[in-house]
Length: 122
Image 1: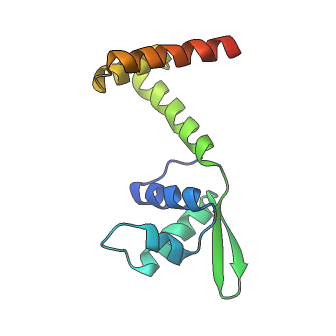
Image 2 (image 1 turned 120 degrees about the horizontal axis):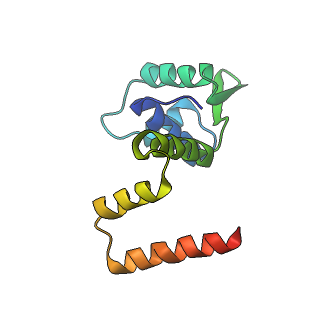
């Protein structure tokens, strides 16, 4: 999936949450000040052209839905971040976030348990 601009990502977050949406649904969920209808319509048309959204004509309007699931988008972006900023090393990436987030001992223990439980599932 292609990298999204900040506004495209914001709109996609809304559509992923709603599952399907008309442009007016998206505008309703955007924070104030609300962008003009045509601005949102243009971004949505770009997302359709990029193959990120699909469009279904209903009467005089279009219903939009995501082509890919949010989880696929998230996974792709996290993989890219891991490669670009952490030399493709998950331990380095986790260490960075543990340090930056100033995790409590309880949170660190919880993270270790999640890692251990996922290791035994494979």
